[in-house]
Image (cartoon, rainbow, N blue to C red; front, top):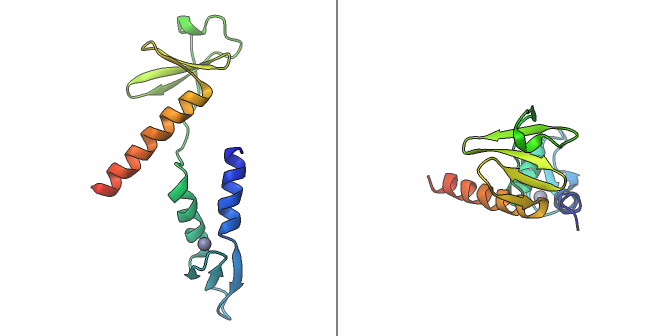
Length: 120
Ligand SMILES: [Zn+2]
């Protein structure tokens, strides 16, 4: 199952069941939630399950690691620069990951950041 399928399931689980006021500002969700701000409720449901971040823009690169790349771009972060190289994600600090491993690392980092923010 892809992340798109998982996201569709969350959105389906939080579908509008019915308007609960004549002014159409109060709703009942498929999950049982009732109130106004239905779209914010749906966003909260997505954010409770998925880490949503704005992806950095790819930057053109002339780094040595990118010499043989057809589409040489780099992605900068505070502690390193990353390159998409033929199915791998490589770092200027040495490690490289499969795309699945890179996504798993990023997900764990986002989950820890979310938890740390909730604790502060
Ligand atoms: Zn809901």
